[in-house]
Image 1 (cartoon, rainbow, N blue to C red):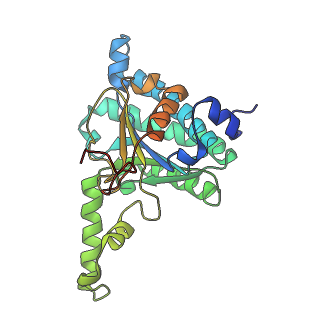
Image 2 (image 1 turned 60 degrees about the vertical axis):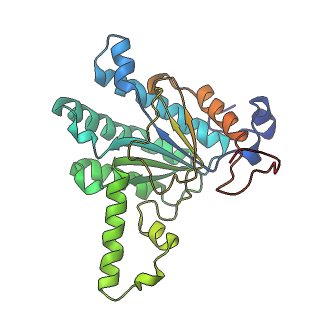
Amino acid sequence: MSKDVPYTDAQLASFDLDRTRLPRHVAIIMDGNGRWARKKGLPRIEGHRRGVGSVRAIVEEASRLGLQQLTLYCFSSENWKRPPRELSLLMQLLRQYLVEERREIHRQGLRFRVIGVISGLDPVIQQEIAATEQLTADNTGMTLCLAINYGARQEITLAVQTLAQAVKDGQLDPLRINEHTIASALMTAGMPDPDLVIRTASEFRISNFLLWQISYSELWVSDRHWPEFKAEDFRTALKDFKHRDRRFGGLSTDHTATDG
């Protein structure tokens, strides 16, 4: 069977997964590329190169599982603090990914999106992002969203500035600002909030990622570094998610539960 053919219900059952209990949107903090490389005695950039292979595998798996959206934290607004040579190589890898994967993303019917301050990237990378978004705009499969030059505090600050300007211009009554208004001003406007956030490399931090959007997301941490994170690990996270009792501040489905 082709690797991009959706899983049947029987195949999902063989993985101990249930289509009705899958998350719509999974967001991943891809961590540990450099540490994986150091453990192997390799340059840090080699960890990033190997990490691209994990991106391909998890995008393919998420699509076959029928998820609505997969968001990958690729490059944060704080990552500019890294050494210039590493930054240069990271940008080369990003451009290479956009160019080499464009046709495959389109062939699989995925819709490509990017969140972040794109204007802060090299103009050539901006052009490659625009080309991939334009090519896949009408696709109806899973949305593949990359967070590039992204920081949640920056995103919220920009949203506040947009709303403040609308109030100043008389286009918005401040008393009518609500959660929906704010969500509509964020970079993720129109996207579902993540149901599940995965972080690799045993790190228990959010790292300024989708702070507004993950208010009620389930968290799952893997001890694997990103270059060694495979489809089987992804399915393990989804199996764990299947058993989570998502109360959203309400009561458990088991009303006899004694915890808060």
